[in-house]
Every structure is written in C-alpha cells, then in structure tokens.
Image (cartoon, rainbow, N blue to C red):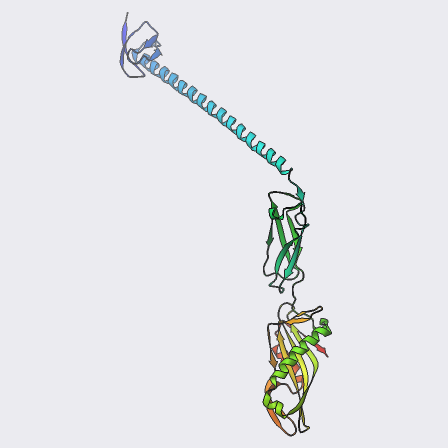
Length: 326
C-alpha cells in the first residue's frame, strides 16, 4: 500500500490516503471525494479540490433552485387565493348592488336660482312626498354654486349607498336671476310709473321749507328717459322731469330736474319693484329765478339740451346710449 498525503478540500486537514483507492473520506470532517490519477500528487489534489468545489456548487445551486421553485409556487398559490377573494367580493358586491331598488335621483328634485346675475346662487329643493324612498340616503352636490350669471350651467351629482341610480349627474341651466336693465324700450308703463314715483319723492325732498313759503305750488311732468349701459351689469338711468315753480305772486320758473340711478334692476310682474346701487339728483347747483323773485338753491338744468350733454359726458366709452320720450 502506497500512502500519499492530501489536504481535505472541506476542512483543510492533512490526510493519509491509499494511492490505490479512488475514494477519499476525511477522518476529521467526514468529507467524501473522488481521487483521480494523473501521475502527480499536486494534480490529484487539484482535481479533488475542483471536483469537491463543483459538487458543492452544484449542491448549492440545486438547493437555491429548489427554494426558488418553492417560493414561486407559494407566490402563485397566494396570488390565486387573493384573486379568488377579490373576484368573489366583486361578484358578491354586484349581486348585493342589484338587489338595491333602482330610482331616478333627479325625478324628485327642483333647482331654484336666486339673486342678481353675476352674484346668483342655486338651491336644490327635494320633494320627499314619495313614501317608498328614503331621501336621507341620497346625497346631492351642486358644483359651481356661487357667482352665477343668467344662462350659466350648474352640475348636480347624486350618490347613494342604498339605491341604484339611473344617472349620477345632471346639468341645469341658470334661469330666473334678476337682470340688470339692458334696454329702456322694454320697460313697461307700470315700471316707469314706479321709477317716476321714486324720482318725485326725491324732487319734493329737494325743495326746502324756505322755498315752499314763497311757492304757490310745484307742477312736475316726466318728459324724458336717458339710459346708458355696457350690456352687462353697469348702467345708469336718468329720469328727467320738467318742473314749474309757481310763486304766490303769479311768477313762474321752469327747470329740468334729473334723478340718476346706477346699476338699476327692474322687477316686472304684479308687484313692480326697483333695485339700484346708487341714486342722486343730477345737475348744477343753482338758484331758482322767476321774473320777480329769486329763491334758494336746487340741483337742476335750464334746458333738455343741457341734460343730454351732461349724460353724454358721464357715458363711458364702452357704454351705449339710449333715450325714450315720455
């Protein structure tokens, strides 16, 4: 028996090995390997190391592949379970959903619009008279609900956890807001009478007590309406009166008094009303003169031409001019 000394590839211990045997077992760690004869001991050692390394590498690779395969199988099984749960939930949810009553959420509502164009708001009114519908379980949302103008569109959405809805969204056109006056020719006689009455109240207030002591009476007559507008929210109406101041001595003075209304809105209908931003008595501040006497001061014009000239000087470039004889 010829012994050769080799080094264990696993624990690096020195091993006495029978040269005639092809199998090697380490007496220290129990490692087993094949010994190939090449004619030289260093080559034998190298072959043992390479084969043992290859074997170990193969074992690790096989183990890694096995673990990877096991992980993939676990992931596939997990994915299948999750998919089954999700699909089951969808199916159950769909079945439950179709058990809900089907209703039209917009059949029982009415949209109301109020305010002035450009500043309007929407209000949703629900008719809850249907006993078969629990309206507290239907939720409505109005989009773009502020600063509305006539002709705008608002969107109403509906949601419910108790009912299936035939539709979830509906658009409504904004109608019924108060509009700023755009055309003086469209104003009714009743509305003009309401404007004139407000103007007369201001004219009477403008004649002070001292002047009234000398006056027999005041005769007033509306003669003209001047109007300028930008076609939107800005306008000015001038209500022109011919006013005769008749004194107790028989003398008379005639002037034109003008009441000026800014951003006027006229509410037509059975009860006519007028809404405006500002109002004041237009004209030059001058004394009232008759043939015999001079009275106190009042805001007035001498002629209609002066009134029209005043209106045109106050008119902005983007505004259009209108007039109406009375």
